Length: 532
Image (tube, rainbow, N blue to C red; front, side):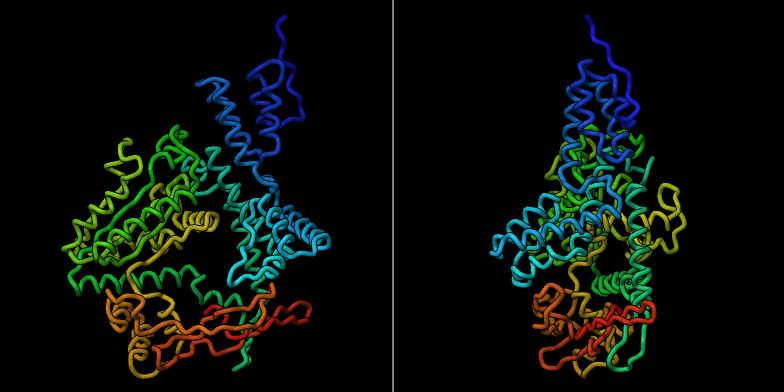
């Protein structure tokens, strides 16, 4: 007698309903799908069910079930459920602190307690604090007992894994949600709004003029302001380009992309790439970073000095690719291209399109314009889209820039990095000064104060000066004062030095106060300044 498939219950998810008739009438496949799909957010479970049905029709039940097993194991390998709201994450943080205090009462040995708390954190996929020169054993344990520490970590891991789930389910691409899912983008904006509201309640007062400053206003003058970030990057690029002109160096614009297996979605059709191996944007960025390290190491062994900038930006499905502007002596250009190509094509060199698209080179033609023009649009469109109306797909550029910002935050991707140049920290500390002692400090100060990056590099010994031999270094002082978790605050930047004379750029002691119902709670920040 042939078994009949029972009627679809009303109390199951839409994803389960759409796959109800697939598989054995006995119900083992339905139970398997219920176990794997019922706890996921609807957007993810529905997308997974859609792909499950497609795989079933094309490749059979076994292939579909293996796909569901693989993706659900990834998405559920954590006690932090992907469907949790932010309020639920806060409750999760409180419950973890309660457990930490309970273990503290049961376990008197600190090392044994630390081991238990690390296992508790790992179960939630939260990286535990590692005992090191800057974090003591007691300091690590104190972090486990801090509710805000847990909440921050839970938010970060939840955002990351939720977004990987959206990518794996095929929901991030230019035909759906470009660069990042709408849900993660919304949460990122909500977090920014929460941060902004907190900053609006805080004021900073220093011990010299005793004037009160809004912390929001101070931060708007720092590198946290997109306009300031863009301005500084453009100044540094223009200065590097000027040096290249003066030295008659070549400029080459390079684009590096990841192998096809790291791309989840086809750009033209929006279909799932059958070669996709599950690599997420963070892992793809690590691949590109490792690749670049090997290239840099080979160039260093061959005594080839390069300088310039690299920009990491998302492709439509969130997979990063890099744009690099490299300057060097013309005699090195051919070898630089060969070395970059060699390492870029070590992974999957024979896949379709690899030889043509994996790495591309464009020589800077100064008859057509400066090198700045080649990179400027990539900097602008990935920060605030200033002077850009539409992106490549015709979307509003400013909205796209905000999505790029959320993408970089979610996956911890450093978007911009200059190389082969002096540390920007020296430049920034010089610009905080109102003057400097005579000599190299004065020369470097004058260049930085006037916004002349090329002159600044010249004052520090030129573009090929080894960082170890720079005539100016950042001045740091050690503080034994206890921080929030009981460990010494450690080193903090105080200014710059040439080894003989010091120029102090952070000479104020700031008090951060929170005004609420005319009551002020103060926290002193000695030896450091608010962002400026």
